Image (cartoon, rainbow, N blue to C red; front, side, top):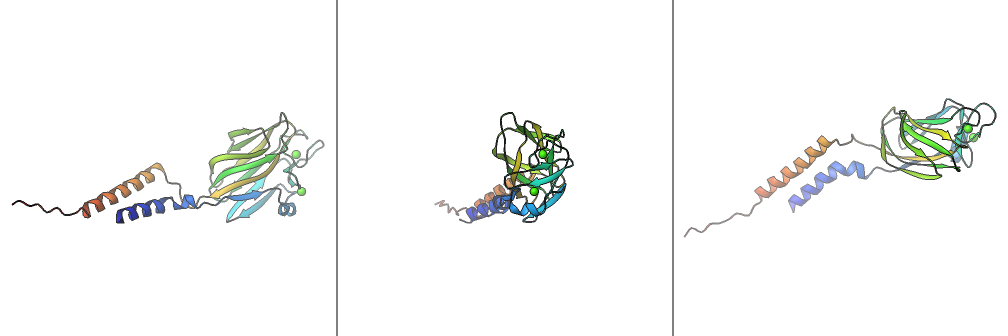
Amino acid sequence: MIRKFITVFCLYFFFLPYVIATPIVFDLRSDLIESIDEQATFELTKNDITATLSTSVGVLNRTSSSFGVNATGSGDATSLIDDGSGIAEFIQIQFNKAIRLLDFTVSSFGSGDSGLLSVNNLAIFEINNTGLNSLNNLFINDGDILSLSFISGNGFSFDSFTVSEISVDEPGSGILLISVLIILFVRKYLRLKYLPEVNLNLN
Ligand SMILES: [Ca+2]
Ligand SMILES: [Ca+2]
């Protein structure tokens, strides 16, 4: 009984921070964005996570149905990430701490429309359809530049993204190995300590 308790306690101690990570949704089409958009950069803070959104090719623009870039010049779809004005638009996000990007939602995709999600100019994947794009807990470090950019077509809307906080350092393989060894050692120690005594009858 004690051995099981120790084992469960150790597993709980090491993995609890990752179990309780709460998804945090940043809704870029929220009414609240309307009071802070129409500028090249602004910050959003939720649960101590601050996301700084920016673009250098116009101003960020939220409407009731979309979120994108309003670029200078004619021909621009003012609330989409497009290249109607002759400039390939993009939106960048930086975080104040390491996070995991769980998913993001885009819309207004049509035939031939495509965009790109990248981190520090490293392409993660191409986006071709409206809807939710789930990520495999993509790790974004403090200062990394997450970017959503136009590739082709008539443009698209960046609707929302979901992150989770990383409350402790990621357990590297070494730490994980040490954890397992500690658990095995404790179990072995307790097994030996509580072995039933054997009375030998030599008569
Ligand atoms: Ca607006
Ligand atoms: Ca635009």
